Length: 121
Image (cartoon, rainbow, N blue to C red):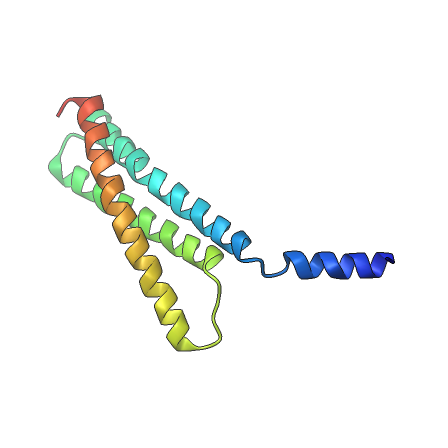
């Protein structure tokens, strides 16, 4: 086997491998999920140490939600494969949104438990 045949065989093996895309998506969703309780704890710390009003807590919560939406958009843009037709793109977007909504709901519950345990609210 020549060097060109070996490199062509290797590129066919790794190019477009579904586990590569799925692995990136899983790691991105895992990072996004871990960001939810960490951002909640950071927001509670900011509210208790620097700001002491309910209006500031509301602004911090909106800022955290904005960061989570931007992080989800980044994960979608980097990890979800593009599709040639609009129908499949819509299916990918709806599936991704449902995945994040389900995981986000569980992570939000974990964040509430973590904040209650750490701050005793």
